[in-house]
Length: 159
Image (cartoon, rainbow, N blue to C red; front, side, top):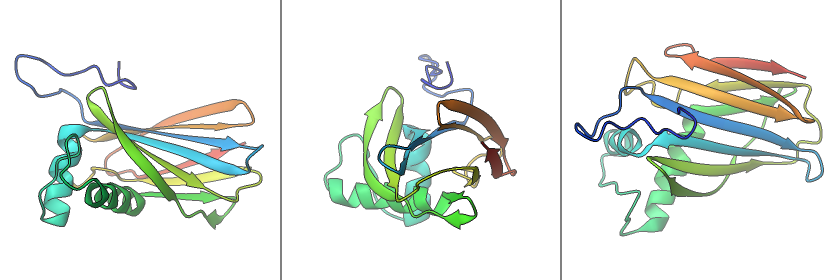
């Protein structure tokens, strides 16, 4: 299962696929976008160490605020969203362990309506050329999905 990541091979400790899953949902009542981004923990920690040249432990952090800052900074540099031609800033809400991955949460507001969503997602593209980023978008009960294969980092969703 890719969305849930159950891909680890116990005998090696390595997984055979490099994937992230980003979900974007327009909440019409709250007039915002709710975003979650799930990344394999081991890959994410490796990239954060390489990028920020610091110790990283997302599962048992000595300094949760420092890990929050790393997660937020990295994802916000690699996940850009434009709603109807306007860039929407992502507000970091936090992260948690989710099976073999780390899921981080964001909110973008105000976003009253969505006709067109442009997403740039190059999460972990610098880490593995085999990286695949899956994006699910839900607007007014309609769901659309796509997958981005490194180096293609842009997706367009129209509703």
